[in-house]
Image 1 (cartoon, protein in one colour):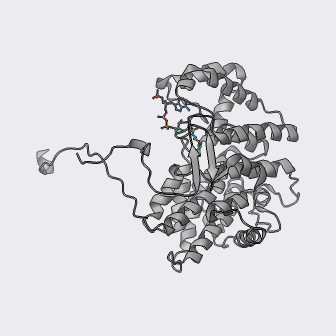
Image 2 (cartoon, protein in one colour):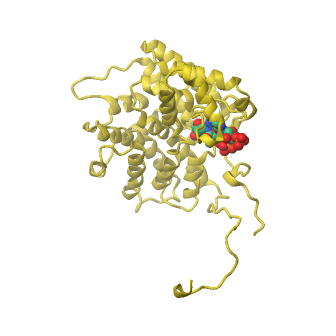
Image 3 (cartoon, protein in one colour):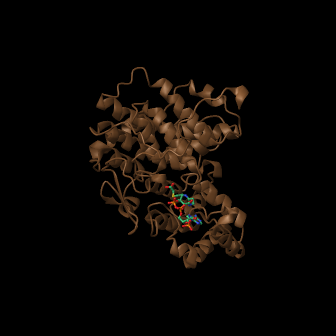
Length: 391
Ligand code: CMC
């Protein structure tokens, strides 16, 4: 009982007011601070988008230089982090390591952290944007037994990350310009998406006044699930399992069969009931990357056939299920030599910009209250305790 509105999965509940990101799911529109995602994808860079999300306006040259300098200045990790990392088994999933390592950041930034001070809040956001790529790359290198690479601060954000991830001491990394461009695009597209599950988690934890580093660690945990950011890893595994365009029809039939428990990964979205505008941009970039790197990936043929077949199938048409941002992103990451277990970590690096922007907005919001949903109670009525010998 209770006079609450029952809204399982929050399909019709606005949990906050926000001025950061706008989505019109029926029209397939996505705006960051009013700017269409298509324009940002073509003209901006990830770091500029991070500034925009955090501050509400595009930076001037001076503002951007200051921001880039601050982010660059905070890329290093305390050396004690190496001992945390060393405690993980070599086969630990990088998302598990990232969650743990981010949580441990709270132990470095807690006692002196004054959340009432706007400058300290801003520096927290900058530290997170700066350090997450360093931690992510370290987690991956630990998993393959390579020595950690320190951030090369003469490089820009995306390129610096790729160096930390992939560079071997004896061989300078040859990066094709299309690799950095594609990575930056994927980071821009993943940077924010209003009140998705991980951002809502960051806000819920943040609403209690908890340490911001653990709030973001909680966001990483929420992102890991295959219904959310874990989908990009799941898509690639699914495409590899389907293997050949000839097998697409049976995969579609299986996805339509509710008994099978199988869904087309990278398809459908809670908000988009039209083509996900991010998916269209990733799809185009996939062709550009494979073309310029001279890679031919049979999984792209499987993906294109799957998309074509699903978009003509009544089941998917009726339910308005279109490819989402993660349908093609894994094919790009694979072409760039990024291992499949790292795909969701890549999403986490980008979404950190969104998480910290929402955390900042929430901390500044005079209407912020602890997030405390109610429930519809379905258990027993009041009853008397019975001693164990009488049960
Ligand atoms: N394959 C087959 N059927 C599907 C799929 C799918 N991928 N997605 C939804 N459906 C069906 C679902 O069975 C239901 O059918 P019916 O009305 O007959 O019961 C109907 O479509 C509505 O689905 P829902 O589960 O009620 O929708 P939702 O808004 O709760 O879920 C979703 C959205 C994204 C979790 C879901 O579409 C899904 O599981 N997709 C696959 C996972 C995926 O790609 N996730 C990444 C999302 S985008 C990246 C991000 O921002 O995280």
